Image (cartoon, rainbow over all chains, first blue to last red):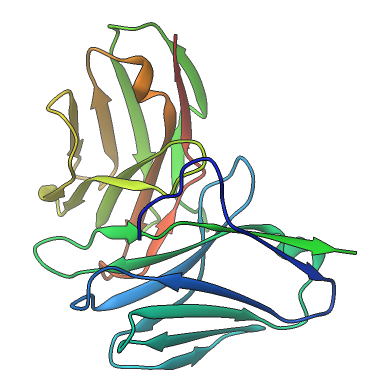
Length: 113
Length: 111
């Protein structure tokens, strides 16, 4: 995923609705994927991860889906709350000699009260 | 338990100067990585260290260097600062190399 620079895609949802944030990753050999939430002025916060041998993983109010055929990840947030407003990044890890994260372009989630 | 801690949180440097950023990983974590995040973009990998050895290096010039100490803390050094080095520098630590947690970052402004 290449960065889109200063203009981030934005998803606007009503409080209480479900949110779906999508991400395309770049390397079909990637072993591991992580979703991060980044609030303004803060570092990325770990949300949920999934290994390449899985296609779905659920956490508290969040679900990650992995489609390796089309190299696509999604993050579903149930009953979206105002505190969910942030920029969301997906990241992939290709395990070679290092475990470096390759970040996709972020999506800004805005929750309308 | 303390998370990943970084210092300083904000700093301003002049072009040509050098800077040292510091990071303490989560207790028990042996791997530390450094990332650069410019405004509006995702973080870009700079270095990873595990057990005091460099395990990976991103596409950054030799002006960037890092090291990891016996207590697993780490320093990122940048020499001959350029305006384009202005960014949020993030440190991340991990226990099993895969579950990676970030600190709040050090905001560097080069003027």
